[in-house]
Image (cartoon, rainbow, N blue to C red; front, top):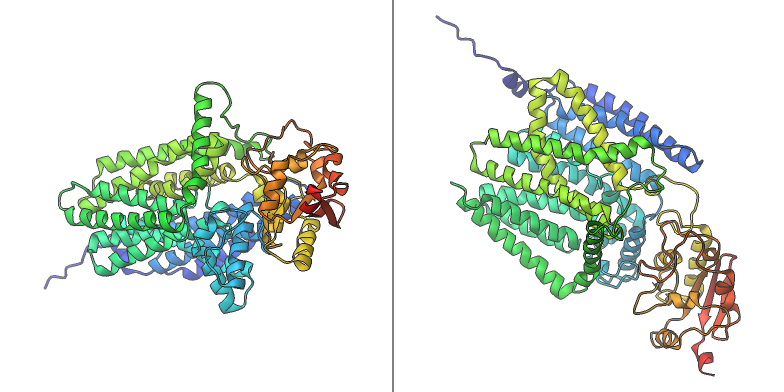
Amino acid sequence: MTLTVPRVTPTSISERSPDKTPWACAVTLTAAGAAGAAALVTADRAAEWGRNPFGWFWLGMLVFTLPAVWWAGRRATGALLRVAVLVAYACFTYLPKLLRNPTGPLYHDEFAHWRQSRGILLDGRLFDPNPIVRVIGDFPGLHSTVAALSALTGASIWHAALLVLIAAHVLVVLGVAVLAEEIWRDGRTAAVAAIAYTLNSSFLFFDTQFGYESLAIPLMIWTLVALLRAMRDRSAGWIVTTLVLSAATVVTHHLTALGLIAIMIIFSAAMTGRRNAAPAAWTAWALTVAAACLVTGWLFWVAPKTAGYLDPYLGKALDQIAGMVDDSGSGGRTLFKQSVAPWWEQKAAFAAPVLALAATAAAAWRLRRRRAADPLTRGFAVAALTIGLCYFPAAVLILTPSGAEGARRSWAFSYVGIALVVAPLMVALLNRAAKIAGPALVALFAVMLVGNTAAGMNPSYRFPGPAAYGSDTRSLTPEVVAASNWLRATQGRDLRIVADRYSGLIFGSFGGQFPVTGSVTFPTYELYLAQPGTPVPPTLIAQLSSWNFEYLIVDRRMAREVPEIGIYFETNEPIPHDGRPAFTLGQLTKFDRLPWTIKIYDSGDIAIYRFDFIQVSR
């Protein structure tokens, strides 16, 4: 009798033997998480005290993320443990934004979304206009979710929002992992892809804010998961799931919905004409057309203002790129100009896209040499590469003031492609030469995490500090909040008021009012610009009267300080910015003597006047 001993390979060992070290992983990541959180808190306290926070911040981030990356990418890590590591990684990477503003809105758009959600909770109405960001009322996905959770749990709007945002952040990481596994059919590659995606500039701070993108991005990623499964299985369940998630994305955020359609078109085109892939291609095109109809219908009938809202940003960006090309210098933007970021952060920011390009090129070369046998996998890989390549031309837009916002938003889409194509290359390098590739990939991870984060958000968004007039993150002061609360308590809410950009943000959110901060067609800033003794343009007064504006907010800091971001009212304001305050105290106190402005509140820097337009005609 002959005893046959089966051949045992490392792969079969890892498949048959479950990971025996979940407790070691738990202890390691718990200790690393505690140490990392302590370092992040120390960084924020250092920033509050005017000290350098950058070293502590990155120490805290890397103390946890590097061990988590090791556990997620380890060959012997089991499937359930790998998922647990990814969840822990996602939760920890939400911590920087949570520590930045744990008690309420801070970024500009957060005030708008807070107001919209609170309005739904108080009044039960969707699609109400928003005075801070005028189109968000037409996309109630995030706001209705937050308001419903607040109503069900009794939590405040802000705490309900945090629950939604943390869940969304976790779903982004898990979604990319599931998407990668759907393509490559390997859990280790899927985990590496999820980690690679988190290196994009928007991940730590922008896509964690209280904004509709933060919920729309995971919806988009899971829509792609459903799309790929529908293409493979062509089952009714996955087809319906794709359409439902597409619709959820559409009602949540305009740009993400448009980005989703673009990505679906790329996947459909990549599958077209491939041998043995015709059914998948037909399924992809049918779902893409259906989703495109949903987007078109929503933008046409429900949110027609969206095109007018987005068009100026694209037009300005193109004009500024043209100004850079013709050497006029009118369109350029200098990265890190007057930035307090340390030199090594700035160097890493310039190195990150170069490293991403090198990694993508190497991954493309490997894909060309090692073509998968499955035609669907080959098509998915080509689509992912095409999506990833979109990152590099979009990076040019960061050099223009108007295009920078669009560039930052696009990275959440294009990095999906980069992560999907680079992950198999990383796993192959680890399999072939782990002792060399391991440290090199750790260094690559650290440089790209530091560099992309530095390029995506300036320090005032990332760290606390003293109040600064004209800052989108540090202009909130107790005096402005008290004034907005007083006006709401004594005069009511939903009042039409005239204000500058920063006080209007607080009065429009916490105060519940409808502020206007000026535009080319409604230049309310001429009220402030008028010199003492010089009449305000009668046409402006007629506009204010006919549109029932009742109150004027004056922030006297405009006579002492220059806005940190260089804007008093709006981007097209006809106000000189030469490093000195654009207003005199006389321009701001002249309202004390005008017969048609009656002072009803004065706290020192903030004054509130009631318009009495009847006195103008006398």
